[in-house]
Length: 555
Ligand code: ATP
Ligand code: MG
Image (cartoon, rainbow, N blue to C red; front, side):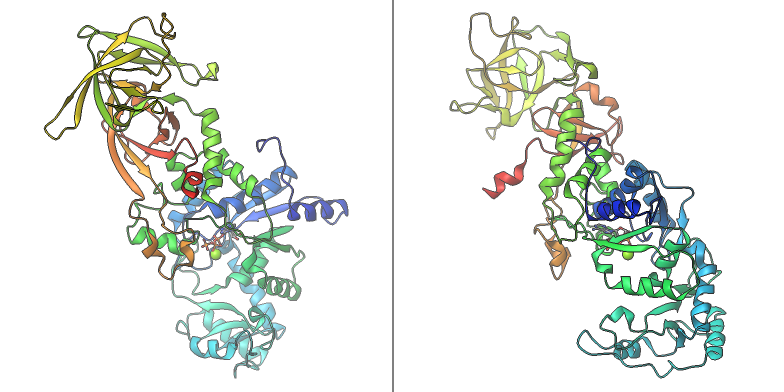
């Protein structure tokens, strides 16, 4: 069943159902809060489908809010790519794009409120000392010597921080909670730090920036978010989320719920590590078709619908999980099997000359775009005396299992005639350069009249009409199922993740639209590459093969 037919159920939707039934909420408001420090990956798609999907199904709203509190790592390029990816996935945020930095003034006022209540203080421990004082999971922390400053002194020092009178790292604002808490996040967490860095939204207005935990809950509350959904690593932070909102004057207190992150086998989901692949030039960019990014998958030929369907199938739980790559591939394969137009491409070409056709013979065959979908129309496929077939589709000798072209035997050319191989020509190394055949002119769209059985069907392109093309064949970027766990994940890179080969495609592909996938019959699903393909030089990315090769490897 497809996404349109089935509305997902999960523990978060159950909570929402209860909140609506009890009258706690009448409208549901969610948000997707990326930090613009990288491109979105398939893990983010899970969060996007969850947050926007809930807003859609409950006739609620979902905000897109950039969680932009660290100007050093963030960039406007990432903001733009994220907006584009969310829209491409088919979702619409409510109103204008929001930024946590829109709230810097309010956040500053709330920090002053906490100081005025004796609930925050300016600390001057060095970062190393602060780490020492924090304690460990088994040992409580100890109070900073600066913890008991007066409210007036703290207000004055915070003002000095804001005015740029402290150097970076020399002072910070901390919440005064409990240095002995069993939750380390509650051991006087930092609320504000000094950074003399220009911000992509606020320029040089600030030299103090609020921390994530302080910013996130307040931003949620200011936007009237009802259900703040995040991944499990923020479970402990929920205490701080609630503490901040309980201790400031704000009329709204959203509830945070955590779900498990998506992990995908043979892939990496950390933006920091993905960034390293880009900066180390292991890949061509964030949108390299081997990357698990939304932009990489799009360039590879994945449809938005297939990614949404994948997210629907994996569901939302609190269980840690490692999803197999085949689950993602199955979604795109099913989509493209149903929807991709068919075409013929020969990836490893060898020439065939049909000797009983006259020189210059040309015939235009009308071929359907999809075998089961007449509504997808037809295309013109030229047939002529010289064609290319795939090297793997011919053998001089073979047993009965081999249902392709064999010397002295017949095979059907897909959408065309039956041919018979008569002889071959080889080069000095013994490689076949040309296969000479005869064709049966009475076999277009029908079996041979005398009842001869021709079982095999192979694909081909007309040599004089075919367009040269480059094919990029991808394998997983990593050699191990869990590269993220490796000490040095760069050492687990698969050196064979990209293979470039050259062949030919049928002329109807001259105008192939980038990122729009075709089924190249018997070869797999391919789309023109958005960066490198042009009418002078066609480049096709293999989106996915026709069959699941993982099962074969396992057995
Ligand atoms: P990364 O570790 O890749 O940098 P992040 O969590 O720091 O990820 P954010 O930009 O902060 O990235 O994430 C935005 C939202 O997407 C958050 O709500 C986060 O929980 C969610 N998210 C990020 N990665 C995943 C994942 N692998 N599975 C599900 N949700 C995710
Ligand atoms: Mg983050």
